[in-house]
Amino acid sequence: MIGRLNHVAIAVPELESAARVYRETLGAIISDTVPQPEHGVTTIFIQLPNTKIELLEPLGEASPIAAFLERNAAGGIHHICYEVDDIVAARDKLVSDGARVLGDGEPKIGAHGKPVLFLHPKDFCGTLVELEQA
Ligand code: CO
Image (tube, rainbow, N blue to C red; front, side, top):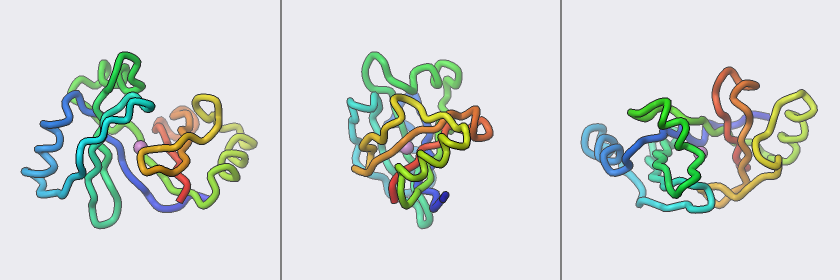
Protein backbone atom coordinates (compact mmCIF):
# COMPACT_ATOMS: atom_id res chain seq x y z
CA MET A 1 0.00 0.00 0.00
CA ILE A 2 2.58 2.54 1.10
CA GLY A 3 4.33 4.26 -1.79
CA ARG A 4 6.85 7.05 -2.25
CA LEU A 5 7.75 9.55 0.44
CA ASN A 6 6.01 12.64 -0.94
CA HIS A 7 7.28 15.13 1.65
CA VAL A 8 8.46 15.77 5.17
CA ALA A 9 6.68 18.72 6.79
CA ILE A 10 8.49 21.01 9.22
CA ALA A 11 6.45 23.44 11.31
CA VAL A 12 8.22 26.75 11.90
CA PRO A 13 7.31 29.87 13.84
CA GLU A 14 8.44 32.18 11.05
CA LEU A 15 8.43 31.10 7.42
CA GLU A 16 10.75 33.73 5.96
CA SER A 17 13.73 32.88 8.16
CA ALA A 18 13.14 29.15 7.62
CA ALA A 19 13.02 29.73 3.86
CA ARG A 20 16.28 31.67 4.07
CA VAL A 21 18.00 28.73 5.78
CA TYR A 22 16.95 26.38 3.00
CA ARG A 23 17.61 28.82 0.16
CA GLU A 24 20.83 30.48 1.31
CA THR A 25 22.48 28.09 3.76
CA LEU A 26 21.44 24.82 2.11
CA GLY A 27 21.24 26.08 -1.47
CA ALA A 28 17.77 24.70 -2.17
CA ILE A 29 15.28 25.93 -4.74
CA ILE A 30 12.13 26.98 -2.90
CA SER A 31 8.57 27.59 -4.05
CA ASP A 32 6.51 30.72 -3.64
CA THR A 33 4.82 31.29 -0.30
CA VAL A 34 1.25 29.96 -0.48
CA PRO A 35 -1.41 30.81 2.15
CA GLN A 36 -3.83 27.90 2.62
CA PRO A 37 -6.58 29.34 4.81
CA GLU A 38 -8.70 26.18 4.57
CA HIS A 39 -5.82 24.27 6.22
CA GLY A 40 -4.76 27.01 8.67
CA VAL A 41 -1.21 27.17 7.37
CA THR A 42 1.04 29.06 5.00
CA THR A 43 3.42 26.81 3.08
CA ILE A 44 6.65 26.84 1.15
CA PHE A 45 7.75 23.71 -0.70
CA ILE A 46 11.38 22.82 -1.25
CA GLN A 47 12.05 20.42 -4.09
CA LEU A 48 14.85 17.96 -3.41
CA PRO A 49 16.09 15.39 -5.93
CA ASN A 50 14.14 12.56 -4.28
CA THR A 51 11.38 14.21 -2.24
CA LYS A 52 10.11 17.54 -0.93
CA ILE A 53 10.23 19.47 2.31
CA GLU A 54 7.08 21.38 3.28
CA LEU A 55 7.65 24.35 5.57
CA LEU A 56 4.50 25.24 7.54
CA GLU A 57 3.73 28.47 9.36
CA PRO A 58 0.49 28.96 11.32
CA LEU A 59 -2.23 30.96 9.57
CA GLY A 60 -5.28 32.30 11.37
CA GLU A 61 -6.73 31.84 14.82
CA ALA A 62 -7.23 28.08 14.93
CA SER A 63 -4.19 26.79 13.10
CA PRO A 64 -3.76 23.02 13.49
CA ILE A 65 -0.01 23.54 14.05
CA ALA A 66 -0.33 26.17 16.82
CA ALA A 67 -0.23 23.65 19.68
CA PHE A 68 2.73 21.87 18.10
CA LEU A 69 4.67 25.14 18.01
CA GLU A 70 3.78 25.85 21.62
CA ARG A 71 5.51 22.58 22.52
CA ASN A 72 8.32 23.06 19.97
CA ALA A 73 9.04 26.77 19.95
CA ALA A 74 11.92 26.57 17.46
CA GLY A 75 9.90 24.37 15.11
CA GLY A 76 10.28 20.69 14.29
CA ILE A 77 9.18 17.80 12.11
CA HIS A 78 5.38 17.87 12.11
CA HIS A 79 4.35 15.07 9.73
CA ILE A 80 5.51 12.83 6.92
CA CYS A 81 3.51 12.22 3.78
CA TYR A 82 3.38 8.92 1.92
CA GLU A 83 1.78 8.39 -1.45
CA VAL A 84 -0.83 5.70 -1.97
CA ASP A 85 -2.36 4.58 -5.26
CA ASP A 86 -5.93 4.58 -3.96
CA ILE A 87 -6.57 6.73 -0.91
CA VAL A 88 -10.07 5.42 -0.20
CA ALA A 89 -8.95 1.77 -0.43
CA ALA A 90 -5.96 2.60 1.81
CA ARG A 91 -8.21 4.34 4.32
CA ASP A 92 -10.67 1.45 4.43
CA LYS A 93 -7.87 -1.08 4.96
CA LEU A 94 -6.26 1.01 7.73
CA VAL A 95 -9.56 1.62 9.51
CA SER A 96 -10.39 -2.09 9.37
CA ASP A 97 -7.00 -2.72 11.01
CA GLY A 98 -7.87 -0.29 13.82
CA ALA A 99 -6.00 2.82 12.69
CA ARG A 100 -7.61 6.18 13.41
CA VAL A 101 -8.16 8.73 10.66
CA LEU A 102 -8.27 12.33 11.87
CA GLY A 103 -11.22 14.64 11.24
CA ASP A 104 -14.33 13.21 9.62
CA GLY A 105 -12.36 10.44 7.91
CA GLU A 106 -13.02 11.75 4.41
CA PRO A 107 -10.14 12.79 2.11
CA LYS A 108 -9.65 16.54 1.69
CA ILE A 109 -7.88 18.33 -1.13
CA GLY A 110 -4.33 19.01 0.07
CA ALA A 111 -1.52 21.36 -0.85
CA HIS A 112 -0.88 19.70 -4.23
CA GLY A 113 -4.51 19.61 -5.31
CA LYS A 114 -4.79 15.89 -4.53
CA PRO A 115 -6.87 14.10 -1.88
CA VAL A 116 -5.14 13.68 1.49
CA LEU A 117 -5.89 12.14 4.88
CA PHE A 118 -4.13 12.34 8.23
CA LEU A 119 -3.61 9.33 10.50
CA HIS A 120 -3.33 9.42 14.27
CA PRO A 121 0.30 9.54 15.44
CA LYS A 122 -0.37 7.05 18.24
CA ASP A 123 -1.11 4.40 15.62
CA PHE A 124 2.07 5.12 13.59
CA CYS A 125 5.08 5.09 15.88
CA GLY A 126 4.42 8.54 17.31
CA THR A 127 4.45 10.21 13.89
CA LEU A 128 1.60 12.12 12.30
CA VAL A 129 1.18 10.53 8.86
CA GLU A 130 -0.41 12.18 5.84
CA LEU A 131 -1.52 9.98 2.96
CA GLU A 132 -1.74 11.54 -0.47
CA GLN A 133 -3.33 10.06 -3.55
CA ALA A 134 -0.45 9.45 -5.99
CO1 CO B 1 1.84 17.73 4.25
